[in-house]
Image 1 (cartoon, rainbow over the protein chains, first blue to last red):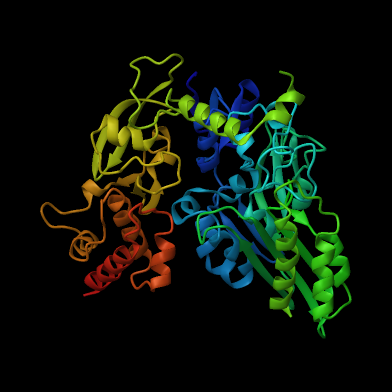
Image 2: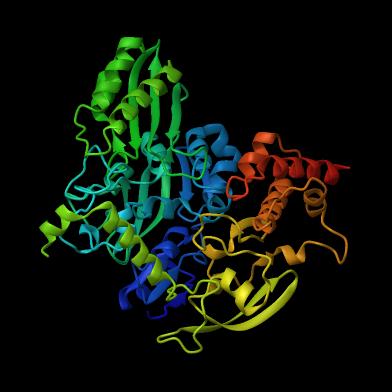
Length: 321
Length: 201
């Protein structure tokens, strides 16, 4: 295997020129990328570190909300006072990711751009994502794979932060050599039926530089729950973030987002519709749980996720009630 | 065998075989892992001259860009206190403090480490005098085989530096990134509790 050049540009402009000239990979915290290189999934000739680019490590609150630089670490999000006070959903989700060591190194940008954990993708299988002709999960070991939005590839998106950020209506600022754009985070992720080889809209040479989180309404409430097999240090089987604005106990607006169930962080639009204009009674919560999984299509070994998702949504709503 | 046929016949055994091939590929060293024989001139090696500040001393070396900090510590500098367990960010045995924060040395590229303060277990005691966390681990027998101990102690130091009075929950969460294969956790938690008291007094 060839070695790689390691470059630490000081500006985005420099980073763009490096990325267009060679077959390079961006590296932020590196906790996902190093694993991919070690496991032989990718073999980049150039790593472009974002660490020395000014401004990517800062986080600040403005009138309209929070601006989080892509290189802010999950540990910083977990312990920041402003986040804890005004955006506790983000702090809660950050605290559930991996371990203290990984949270101290892993960045919010990297967390949103991390590659799937599917064992066929990570293993020695030439699957669809790697240019092969087959999704091995379809007829293989698929207990951790998607129940919603799957096909032709059946990965689940591993990010906890994406789930929380989507529930808060966050957007992503992306900069490329030809300009910049800000896209709602929902539009940032890409289903395999659109492009099986990537999980985000980022084109080669584009860089996710900032996450913007609108300031929650004063009457808004939220919950984050992550179900996993171990008590710590594990990816979600199913996670749920709920954000709801109520007036006189009637739900004006609800956003329900699930992780671990689909190739992208999954917004449960049907559940949200079932909640709008209702008060959170037992039957309404049950209906919202059912609506979450109406479209679910399990593979041979992951039907349990349907029950898990349905009941977790009910449980989260009960906490909000 | 065509892809369709291969798909239909893939079995658990094939899956495990696939895993084994993956593991064999690792030892050829993409990112050079600790314990892997370093090739003197690997094909396509990109070498950089780097200076690392470790336990207060500067070390300058010609490093392959693929070397992890763990590989450099153990195999280039002889600092074997940071242990190589999984070598993939899944066990915590290689935990060191970088700028005061516990990090996995196997997940940090050496080339990314210049300019940072690296503390390994070798740099924790002052001469013959153990650090209070080390002393507490000895007194409470916070170990069995002790392979995880250097990482545990540095994680505990990182925790106590930012939270001098941790609850038991804080300790459990603070050490959640370090596995103990002997499951000596109750005594490890007791040791960290004792260390907090020792530092406070």
